[in-house]
Length: 267
Ligand code: PEP
Image (tube, rainbow, N blue to C red):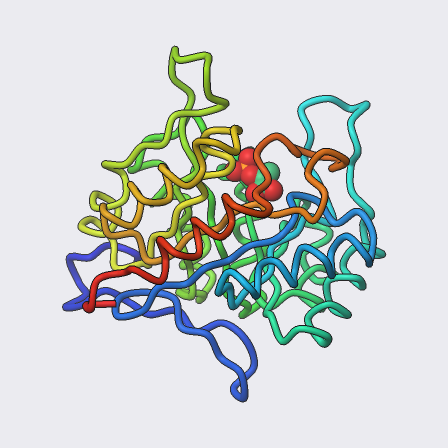
């Protein structure tokens, strides 16, 4: 279902209600930005304003956070979803947020414009089938230890439930390099676009975990033909509860906005 073989052209996924739909795919370039985690209404609105100023049309932000440590901030849950919905009304940015458990799919879908399946859950088949049944677009992140083929087969689980509105998100894979949290697999961008008809976007923030590398990796993703970017921004990265070291603010964000504005005419 997601293979390119039976599709003449690459697909565009439409996100949001008919009156303010955002296309993701060939012929357009989508910037998604926002905090790694929703921490408060003030912080999320501040991040959303930074995102909008950089040219983003969608807001990211985790209300349910899958954390490596059980002692780390786990997210605000439904309160976080309400904040995202309020900020959508205040800014016009559409919302993508992660759903971590199959039992929460309906709840998250009632607030989000697009459902995010995170790297850790790429092969959570019950979750994939759950998001496939909602009718909401799905952003499927690549697992850090997954091949491109496994990633596409995970997308196939979503598609099998009748939902072909899937956006693939390359977010880096685990390699032997310890200086970055993951290693951005640039070749996966054209590869996934050649093997499937789905849009492919890139999350340079989670790929490297280091603010100073986010813009260079974003440029690499753009050059490799990515259909969009998803980046972490935070109004006060030094006080962020999650991954502040990779959040953009200020000059780096302006540089990212300039890189996106300088996209070649084909976009
Ligand atoms: C995220 O985008 O919030 C996230 C946790 O990313 P990943 O699933 O790629 O680690």
